[in-house]
Length: 91
Image (tube, rainbow, N blue to C red; front, side, top):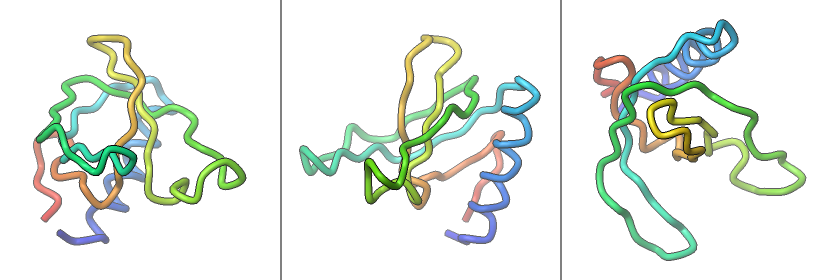
């Protein structure tokens, strides 16, 4: 995976979200608390939301917060585990 591509995708996600334009992405889920994954997650329509403060979590730099617009559910994804953005591989 290219970190340059991931950070470029994150910047584009921020731009789209600020204009209220949804995007799609996929990532490997992971719960550090449980030490397990629920597999590949594909989100068809998402926008970013305010993430965790660095005062609250040491993961604030690597977790992105999003809202799944199809389900209305909030979620988090680890930045290094993002695989695609708008159907483009980030490898």
